[in-house]
Image (cartoon, rainbow, N blue to C red; front, side, top):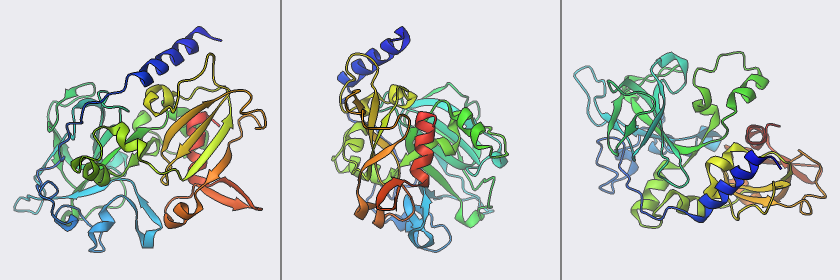
Length: 338
């Protein structure tokens, strides 16, 4: 076994044994006080044009449940005489600036900032998009405090223009799938340049921000790990591989148990309905003996859950057998370099 990999898994095992227990110090990322006051979402969520505030929430909230929205659109509270929003956008928790995209035309996010939160377990990212401007002096690598101003709310976008009347801040909490995103992006031959490194939205997988905040406020969770532990599995995948995904090296608290001596012969991974790989179990050679190497196999599918969530395709039935759907295929490619 290579010494580097032996050290890697020793570090993972240590990190799993020492999990953060402190309660997160969260802050709503805009000045709008409606969420903190327990008011209806219509008072702080921006609808996507339908008039229904639920269309600005997370999940299959658009086009009759078929279009997935991976974040929360927080509405503007204050505007200037021209109708432009003037709300500050602030860090939801202390973290480190990992990416700043100041060019509004280079992403569907428009101008956006990504923070990583290494003091959280797991160390999730938060993302703040459609900004009018970035806070002066803010740069990659800066440590920021909870509620520190990151920019000003706007309606910037590199894709479909956002009307000023629907200006908002698109907010995400989630995990990065792979550090090797550039190689995956190149293999897919999208025909456009990736200006965002691993902080491209195609490599970021969000959880429901509003549900996360609500669970925290209700004291049902204290940490990010608590939230992941409450996720309902939609599919369970087994794969025989000696590859060690960097995902689990970065989020070791998602291991269900430490790896045994040596490199795992494979993995069992549980995904929630939106495709977040939230629980990882290392497998022995005996446990993967019946599997074809590098070929994922679905060993459990919650068909009722997937039927309710039509905006993501994680599993499809072919000739009476469950196989990965297009959204799960993409995540597996990124995780394992398939």
